[in-house]
Length: 385
Ligand code: ADE
Image 1 (cartoon, helix red, strand yellow):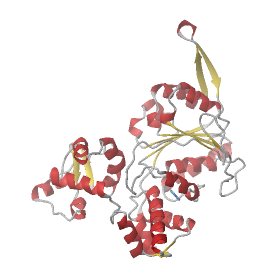
Image 2: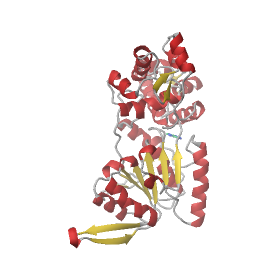
Image 3: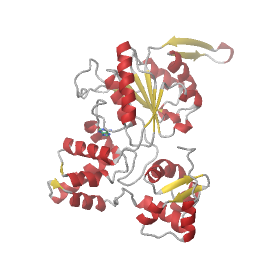
Image 4: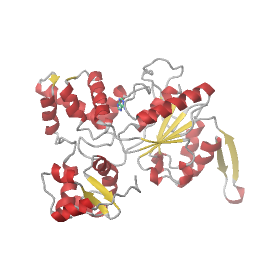
C-alpha cells in the first residue's frame, strides 16, 4: 500500500493489496490522525502503537469481512452498489460514535469497496489554509478523503472545506487588504468520510453537507465473539469457545479492546508455555491485567464507588466526579462514561449521573432506602445521546 502523507511526501510501498484482489487501483493510505485522550490501562479505547501495528494485519478489507454494525453495512452496501453502477463517487459520509468501534476501519473498507484511493488526515492536523489546499490538491476523481476527529477542524479550515465538499471547488486567496484576490479552482469529485466521537460538536452547516450520517454502535457479545475468534485465528492463537466468550465479554463492546485482549492472552500464554487457551486460562490472564468480568478496570470501579459512596448514588455532576477521581471531565465523558451507560451501570439525568442497581450489585453493595428511591425516580436524559 502506498502511503502518502497529507503534506505530500511519498513514503515507500509495503506491497500490501486488498485481500479480495478485485480492485483495479491500490488503496492508498495517507497520514493517520492522532488520538487526544489516553487511558493508561489495557482497556483504553485510544489506539496504541501496538494496536496500530497489529491492526494492519487484522483489519477487515471488505464489507463482507466486516463484523457487526449490520444496519449501517446494509445501507452502505446499497449506496456503494448504486454509486458504482452510476460510475459516480459515493456521497459524503459522516461516521460517529465512541472510540475504538471501527470508524477508520470502515473508512478504509468504503474506499476498498469503491476501488478508490484513501487520503487519511485529522481535524487538528489541518491547522492552516495551506494544509487544506495541499490536501485537496492531491485529490483525484473518486478518491476518499478521510478526516478523523473532524469536530476539531478550526473555523477557517471548515469554511475552506464547504465549497470543496458541496460544489467541488476551492477558493484560493492571495495578496492582502485592497490587493486581495480570490481564485476559484475546480476539484475532482471525491468522497469525504468524516469521523468523530462528538457529533454534537460539529457545526450544523458541516453536518448538513454529509449525505449520510452513520452512528456506530457498541458491539454485542455475539459480534465480539466473532471478532475475537477471527483475530485469534489470524494471530494463530488456539482458543476454545469458553475463552472466546470470556475475552469478548470483557471487551466493553469495542473491537479495538477485543483485539488487544486477544494479544494479551496470547502473550500470557506464551510466557506460561500454554499453547491452548481455555476459559479458565483466559480469565486468569485477563485478571492479571485487572480486567474484571464486565470489562471494568480500576478507574471505572472507582467512578462507581465515588458516585455511590461519596455522593449517595447521585445525581451528581460529571465535573464533581472528575475532581474527586482526579481525571478531566472530557476524558470521563468521552472515554469512560459511554460504556458505563451502555452497560447499564450509570444513567445520565438532567441533574447529573445516577448509579443503577447493577452498579451496586457489581461492587457488592446494597442500596439504602433513599438510594433505592432515587433509582426508582430517575429521569433519563437522552438529549446528549
Ligand atoms: N476488527 C476490528 N473491527 C472489526 C470488525 N468490525 N469486523 C472484523 N474485524 C474487525
